[in-house]
Image 1 (cartoon, one colour):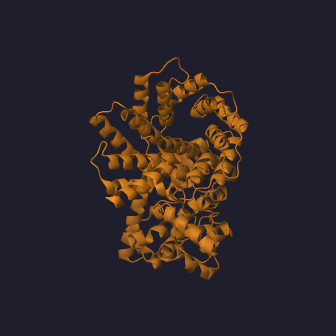
Image 2 (cartoon, rainbow, N blue to C red; image 1 turned 135 degrees about the horizontal axis):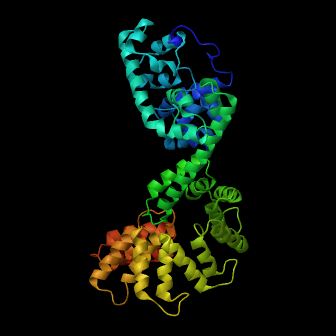
Image 3 (spheres, rainbow, N blue to C red; image 1 turned 90 degrees about the vertical axis):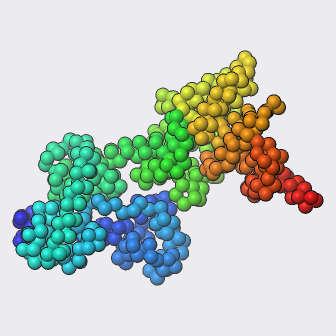
Length: 512
């Protein structure tokens, strides 16, 4: 146990001048805040100011935005800090240690280890790697009281357990870097390195960790950093694809906006341009939509060769975003490029819409039907709804196919697509509708009133239809109060028919 008395030759006893900032970052728990800072426009200088003032995550959780004025942080930045704080991931118990005893120190409060015990270990030259070899009796021998020694031993066992669970990810990094696992695994593991924690660190922090704390040769450090960055991109793409599938209801996923949002935000934090664009477009970070910056993210991703971003920037040109004028030719260029380069994985529904509405190409309903069908068969819930419409109206076909229309409306509704629910409700509420049909339609409209960031207009239409059912007693008993509630919800958001219906309802109830 060389660490109890002295440091072996060549072992750095302290970090270089640039490292204290990193030590404070991790010991304060602010790494979780920094992970989402980009999403809320929290500046680097604000993060540096918090670190310099030795503010911890716990301090922020007890503070108020106005408190940050005391350290010359602007009111705007202070508000953004607290917005980010509400969305920051809770600091993981397992984080890379950049201070000599940073990992154990970060767990001290959790295990009731006194600060003096940490200082005692530091004075004796013990670091996060060497502390793993210590038993309770070893700690007592160097002057640690028995109670704290028992707690330190308990913390060590907990960290060893975490290391075992994190082993596969760490091994993957070493194998990706083409390095011998046995040579570096124990050291990196004891420093708290895991795939999940390392992919969150920028390259300069990785260099400090690998070179200074783990004493890995420079050439191998470069290979490790490249491996982490490659895996970061790979994992970000996986999270984006999964999040995109749940958020929009594609790839045969039943829509789950909450789950999709979580996955998309994580991908965005890892630097995924298309995920960042989606977060901006739908306000997933701070509930403030920013279509201008979303388009910038999509364009950046498209220029990097990401086909989903190509499709999204094409859709932005299709409808015209804030700061991005409608351009049908650009829309078709990017969407068609997405379809071609992704081998029809991305952009099929967008391509169908281009042919359907003559966006950058001559109107061709047959081609529109073909692309809607491909997208629907690939599991796109919104495309299923539009394919059903094609069958019902005979769009791109020689005649109408009502049975096929109903089948695709049902498939879309089953995946939670708001438009699919509306189309299916309309299907049931026809001129020959029975009481059972009306009740089914009402329940479908009612389900469609649930918040949907992707199709807010569809939600408003559903609210109007539910209000109408309550007013007329179609599919549900008449209830004027409920009718007013749903009409009001749609009317406040600008639904014209709901506004007119609400006025009539108020006048009707006044006369009665």
